[in-house]
Length: 126
Image (cartoon, rainbow, N blue to C red; front, side, top):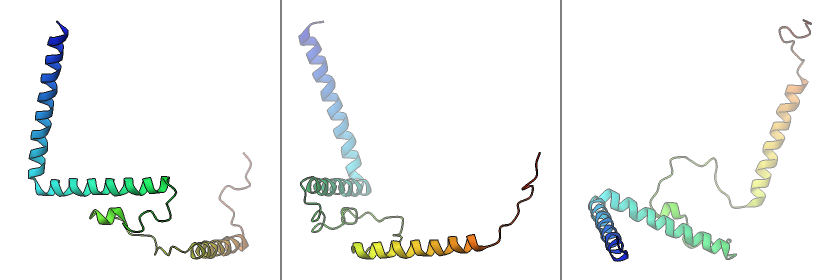
């Protein structure tokens, strides 16, 4: 085979491949739900990329401040609920953590103050 024939075959194959994908995408875009999902996904990817770019440029404090949550903007509803309210106040987070550690310390102290129970078979020698 000559180089011209190989080039023609590759060009023809590439053209058929592009035609196939165009038909496939046209069929997908005819479905309203799929088109909406693709649009939301692209919007989410774009806003995420913008946020990451802003973070890489050292603007992470302002990243997303004007755009809000890119997931919510794209219309995605989270399946899980938040563990608690987000306060955005680091002092509150530290206070909450300190309070929870104190509660754990009290529980451990209570458990340690109880008399030890002997387990079955404890102290037996084989």
